[in-house]
Length: 540
Ligand SMILES: CCCCCCCCCCCCCCCC(=O)OC/C=C(C)/C=C/C=C(C)/C=C/C1=C(C)CCCC1(C)C
Ligand SMILES: [Fe+2]
Image (cartoon, rainbow, N blue to C red):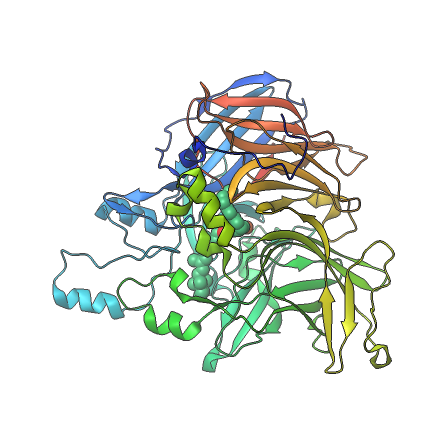
C-alpha cells in the first residue's frame, strides 16, 4: 500500500491495465489459490461478480466496454481456503455467437450484421423483424427470493446456479411487468422485497419511469416474480426522450429518481434500429439545456409528489451512493460527472486499451467526476421564495424556491479530484441503506483506469486508500463482521489484477476500518474487468 494522498496521480506507463480488457477462457473446474495473510474465521461464502470476458467473436471485435460476453466469477471462501471459478453465461447472445462464429445479437456499442450466408430475401426479413434485444447479462448479479439472477439493463434476466455457475433459465420481465428494462441496481428491503426502476414506453408513445416491487420469498414456494407489480409511475420531462437511468435512491419513506440530461431518442431507437449497423449507443443524445431534474415519490402509499420540481445544472449520474431522510429533508449522495456529454462515449475499448498518454488525453475531454450531496426539502411554502430552504446544520447544500415554483438545488461537494473519480460506491448496505451514515467505499478511477480503493467519510470528507503498483482493483464490496458495533467494522472484498506478478490476480481482503490488507488469495490467471457483484454468505 502506498500513496497516502488520494489526489496524487499515479502513472501507468507500462499500460498493464490493458490486460483486464482481454478475452479469457472459462474454467472447467475451480482453481486453487495461494492465501497469504489471515482470513477472518467468520468469512465463509462466495463473492460472485459479473463482467465482460469475451471481447471478440472470431474475427469480429466488440467495440464498447459493455459489449463483451458475460462471464460470471466466483471466489469461494471456506475455512481459510479459497478457490476461484468462472463460466460464460449461456445467454442467447453467447450461444448463437459461438455457433455462428460472429456477433449475432447487437450489443450496447456493437451492431450485429445479418448472416452473409443468407440470401438477400431472408436478410431483408431479418432487418425488419424488429429488435432482438440483448440478454448479455454482464453488469450485475443479485438474489430475487431464493434465486440468483445475472442481469444487464434490458428486459431479460438470467437465472444462474450460484454454486456451479451454470446458466439455468432466461426470464423475460415483460411477462410479468410493464417495463422495457430495469436497472442492474435494485434496492432490497429488510424483508427481502426487491425494488427497481425502468423505462416504460406505453401505448400512444406515452413515456414514464416505472418503479417496480418484487415481493420477498413466498411461503408457498412460488416464484416471487409472479407477484411483482409496478408501484409508482414517474413522468418523463420530455415526450419522446426518456433519460438513461442506471440506479435510483430509496429512503425509509421515499423513492428518489434523478432524471439526467442523457436521453434515449426513442424515435431514433425505434426507427433506425432495423437499419444496418445501428446499436444502442447510437440512440443516446445529450440535452444541453434541460439540466437535471430530481423526482420524489412516497413509498407507502406509493404516490408521485408532483408539486415539487427540483432542478439543478447538468450532470451524468450512474451510481447513487445512499439517500436518507433527516428533519424534513431528503439527503441524496451521488457519484456525478459534470455536464451533459455522455460518459459512456469515453468507454470504447479502443480508448481503454490505449497507451497511457492517450488514455489521459481522452479523459481530459470527458466530463469531470465529483461526489456530491444534494438536499431536497419536503415541506415548501410559497412565502419562502428566494431563500435557502436547507436548515440542516451539517451541510452547505442549498435549495432555493424560485418564482416559477421550481426549487433550484446546489450541491455540497464531498469528494473531487481532477480526472480522479470515486465510482462504483458501496456502503454497509444492510445497516445503512436509506439511513444517515458515515462511510462509503469506492473504486478510484484514474483517467477511467481503476487503480485504487478509497474509503470516504461523508461527514468529515476524510479519505483513506489502498493502492499497489501496477495493480487494477474492482468495486469493493463491504461485508460486516457478525455482531459488529461500528458502521465500518467489516471487510472489503475486491478482485485485483497485477499483470506482472507470478500469480497475476488476487482476491483482496481489506480491513474496512483501517483500509489495510488482511489477506490475499492469489490465482494463476488474469481476471478480466468486473462491473458489479454480490457476496453470498454460506448458509449452514
Ligand atoms: C470496473 C472498472 C471499469 C473501468 C472504467 C469504468 C469507467 C466508469 C465510469 C462511470 C461509471 C459507469 C458505471 C457504469 C457501470 C455499468 O455497469 O454499466 C453497464 C451498462 C450496460 C451494459 C447497459 C446496457 C443497457 C442497455 C442494453 C439498454 C437498452 C435499452 C435502451 C438503451 C433503450 C430502450 C430500452 C432498452 C432496450 C432497455
Ligand atoms: Fe452500475
